[in-house]
Image 1: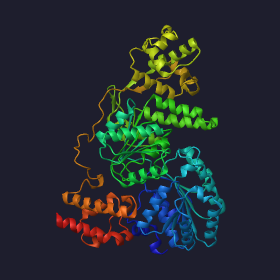
Image 2: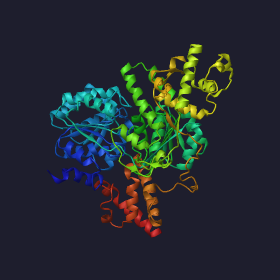
Image 3: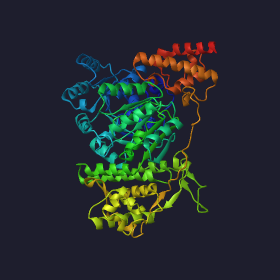
Length: 640
């Protein structure tokens, strides 16, 4: 093989990286050789290189174009822009092109002038597009199919898109063209569905570690979500980019406004906004620093912004896959980042209600309930959250803390050192008796009134509060009235969350969210099943970086270790990068990542040779920007 066609040579020449990471090398070698692959790799793990390098290698070997199926127009634009910056001929076909532009792309494609072509699944399955692929195939110029965000093909995936199902045509029509399907998150059920739907039974499976050690996981009980969120951002992430996820459009609008009123730079994003406004907000988030996007889950897939320092959920997601995918958008640059979530009893009620009201088949609902229960278990956990998260995806964490103690003894426990439960182990209390009293109250209320009541009313009875509603129905006569006076409302809500999570109680959405006993309540009522919960105490939240003075935006983490002269070079390079990005209408990180600028600033280069070996400085970027980079570094040196 021509040495310029080898994957490692392409990685160094085109992308400017000296070595592959993790399983990238094995994936790239396998696909370049013509093998099919299913790749599970966490966000920020370098999935794009797993198909971009084989695409270039196969095109240089005369095997033709790689078709990349991508679900979002914004992602296509940025990926193609990044490839152009690296000197790779790439294009997309989507609804943003007019007829003349579309024809121009098709002409270049048939002329062999494009290495990677991006298209949405909806377009791929059209007769015109399939005919285009037939023509390429007839001339031996169809080299690779890459299916990004492959979990979208599965009904069990958190971003299911029916259009992905039609992609089976690729294997049926051109079985000898290698395929690579990629996703950042999929449990065993979703993986099996991807394999079946895309006919990847013979494909090699590459499953990387799901661990993102740079992300700190924190989950707090929801009390006043708006105030809690504001406190979290102001104390721990002032002036930093982040994403805040909400369940409803109304919630998005309210929180975005509240953050702006508090002096933060926040914008809303949801499907109800005009398309032009949504696009403008997304572009600004990608291109500027210190911007916070408040959004529904409609925002985020394919977001490559590397310096998102936090992802916050003010409403609980539907499942762990969604939570992992969304939190994974933080810290793509490998620097410290934070995944923060506030959740409460109403979140549990709402999610169970949505499942119950769904028109889906019962089997589907049962799987959705199991997925929700797994997320609830993560939220209620008193042990290492990272260990639980990894275990969900079939990965075992090996780090342990042998010094942990309980009641005078010691034991070994999984310990990541970067989640709230590991950093501040919660106190745990035996809530079994409280749970039994709550379940007994629900049972006696149903017996007495023959109708159900909501959580608030049940708690009022147990705490002995003679409200008008309690008196109206005579519930002060129930034997459990006042038997739970020693429990706070906060404690009772925590126990109710757990009882709903384990299926001992059901929320009846058809009857105003009333609580009803289920079979799983029996062993708890009989005292056969203990209920142990975290003791929610009024501990002050950690004030990490809380005292940082507002002296302007601090240097990004990648540049934190530079000396004074290096910081000056970094700042000058960053300002220059911003100008270039605006000229090219691209996010700044597409030109150079912060890590690349920091490496250049640390070297203080004076000659082109000094730039050799800088990660992210490929041959095309060296040719295009090398002299400018050197000029800025020399100028900064002379000014210092």
